Length: 360
Image (cartoon, rainbow, N blue to C red; front, side):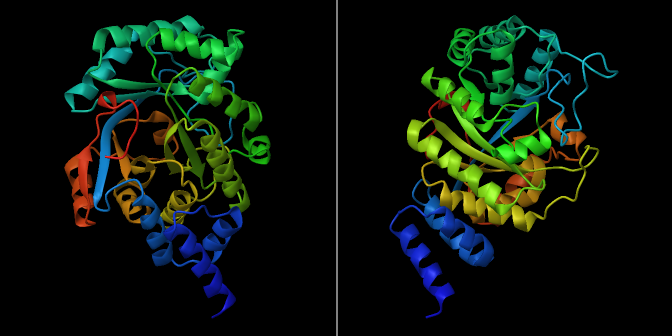
């Protein structure tokens, strides 16, 4: 048997025995495994958490409550600097109108994503989230902010991450997502988002969120100029954090959209995205839910179910990604039909009815 076949057999044996693969194993798979082999290994890992032909989905909306931001990430086509033409901030009635439309369309999850707006005090957020919880109760759930925004608000208010998490919890917040991670290496952040926080600071904030009893998630964006080594460092840090906290409810990866951004570039192929999704499923053996991105891959995202994913969103809006070239389809029946055609039975997942994410 060749050295390559030996290495593949060793990795297959680990996955079959529910043993952890190493970063070296993951690097070898990326360079050498076929798509079919990646699918098989990812499916075996997925089966530890979920029935083979079952998947879940949510209908959701990302509410971009402001586009004013001082982070100046060079991969963002959405932001406006303070005082720049085109900047905006939504009031509560604007937000309620979007939530009402979401409910009318049958969705029950909203996520908030804006920017580092120096003119918005902490009370803007706490008042908004408190009113949403009072007005809608458990009819819908909301992901309040990304970790990056949470960090900026805490620092702007001169609060520790623990104190800020407590303030949001008192305002009715239950979730703060892992957004703002992109690629969690210091080199990547120095190249593209030098005014954002360090990797160590990011995980310190996420740990404070978990310690406060709030739910959080892991996210990742690929397709910039990152190396496979940087991708694997991101996955390794994520797996280690989950080992230490058990706080990550899911992992969502999507692709960078290069249109109208400062750095531009060429969008990676769907095949590369699917291979990375499979690698993530195999490597992140301690995170139960792996989500594929309809927002950035459209119908082809459903192929991610063959590469280890078990869950997906049907988004109705996300200005941040749309400004960079993403297109959103509201033909939900067609998208769900693709899941059926691939051999999966999709079931709606009400996040508001199951705050602790478990396999269905």
